[in-house]
Image (cartoon, rainbow, N blue to C red):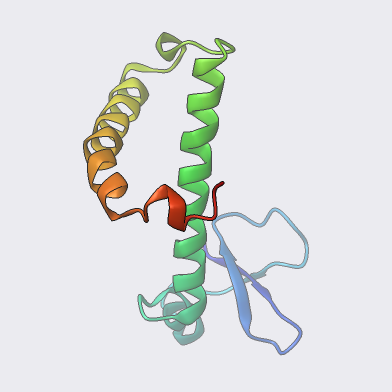
Length: 112
């Protein structure tokens, strides 16, 4: 670790733990390019983190749908995952009144 994939300009585009593709190049972890790519202020890393947060929300919504439709049951998940799902659901429901208070009135949302 790490193996890197470069973009067309030769910059690191992604970092991988394993060489799962022949186009990945090994670089030592303390390589300046690797350290720069993984730095908290790296713009691409920020984009990736935002994307992760969006995907987490999508997975959360998907899980809710599957449970609501009884395709899966909460107890199908490991206990640690059950605890996280329940805690997250409780946090979101506690914020629901706040979100409703901040939403524009129905007549301003373009609804008939």
